[in-house]
Length: 171
Image 1 (cartoon, rainbow, N blue to C red):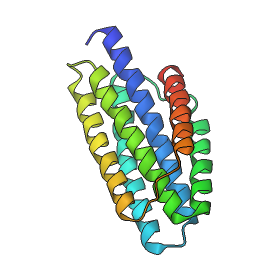
Image 2: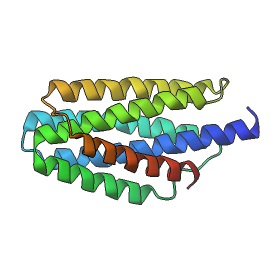
Image 3: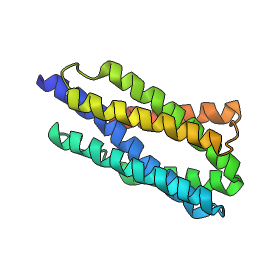
């Protein structure tokens, strides 16, 4: 790949890495709050899968000679707080937050598949696998009783994600 293509792949993988940092925080907070033992296990299993994603995206950053976001502690703290709030409201709302988050992440990963350089097959494979896992997480959360979040909450989540992804692309 050219230097510009490596930078682009690195920036996209940095954004994906941030998403996985946030997933760790979100699932950890939700698992910590729920009183439902089965739901806690489900959330912890999803967190374990997200740990794989975190490792894969970090490995791609390293291979591309790029660094993770300097703001990862901020992203983690924000996602943890959001996970706590959602879980405190109810398990169904918490699961609804998982559905909306994973649907947005899946769409985001799909857009990255369209932007990654064609020859960056390693990053493409990672992003494709992550997309499939995120879609499954959303489906499982729906099956577990998720409620659909109100449209204004969904829009607020999209706006927050836009700020995060735009910032993480560079910082």
